[in-house]
Amino acid sequence: MSDITTTPEARLKMAADLFGLKEMPCLDREQVELLQVAAGDCGAAFFDDLIKTFQSESAPRIERLERECGAKNLPEIRRHCHFVAGSAANIGLERLSKLCRNIEKQCDEGTFTAFDTCVPVVRSEMSTAVKEIRALLAV
Image 1 (cartoon, rainbow, N blue to C red):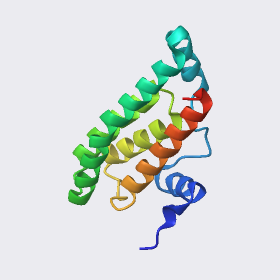
Image 2 (tube, one colour; image 1 turned 120 degrees about the vertical axis):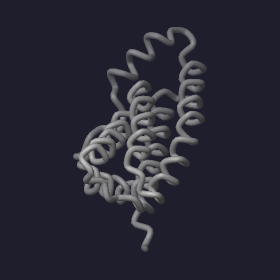
Image 3 (cartoon, rainbow, N blue to C red; image 1 turned 180 degrees about the vertical axis):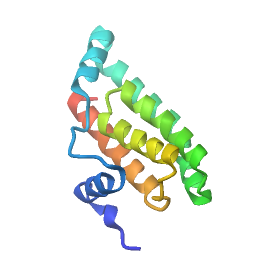
């Protein structure tokens, strides 16, 4: 298989094609602003810790997601995507959350078939989202 996920544009197109994402912003600016208010004077340190926590808690889920995609285990694929979707939404990673919610929905409907491409797309979107939120918040 050729590596179609080499550019961010190619990865976004793959996500849009496979998981029904239309062009949408990577970040939920309202959620990020709410977190900025909550962070108060702790700003950068707060967000750095929040993003590191998200990454450290999501990484094992993505590893499990990869195993479950190999086993074509829809309930477990759904469960791991549900975790990542909720965690991503909490810190304003809108497109990643929507991607994972769409995978969940496809699992619920029994229509999920992207076993080989799911994990590379989720990993790519996670990487893009983390880069974008770090750039926005300068952390």
